[in-house]
Image (cartoon, rainbow, N blue to C red; front, side, top):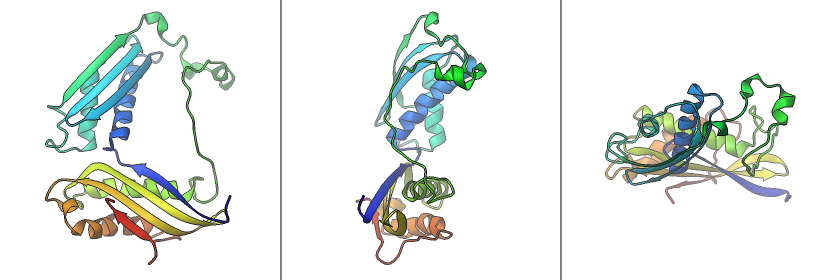
Length: 235
């Protein structure tokens, strides 16, 4: 690895389409598991303008109103009715109920670690990440800062400090490293969806985001943005 490099991490708010789809699928799964701990379910979701597509394949002894669960998630995220109306949006569904014997054969909550290790996996993923001593969370500094900025951005929006900014936002944090140690904030990129005529459509958005989000997060950080830090809004 080079002696000097910039490492960038990204985090998104609850209204980002990718995250919203994941949240909807997780909520549907949670409802099934609440009724049937041995339920098996695969759910997939996609979004368009005021339309939600939801496909589910499941084997469970449970009854779940899946479209209603999706609407509840959209409501909790905080979209305005004119952007994504949870009550009036179209929910297109495709369900495939499998035979009951396709349910998971055992309740994992009663298994030991050794027994859990013997269960076969049915899906594969590629995971990137590592533990380190850069932060109390034992995570790399860029992702910790990105997550903190996203949480603060969400809180500021709900507190009414960012009128017009939508729940769909993305934050990227670039941290410059010397050797293996973070030394400065190289760049901050904030992509904030906004309504026409709101704070997001004016020059005030930069000052509002810096004052209510960036400054609030970095006020107690050892490494802070400096005069050379690039702060980029809606590139």
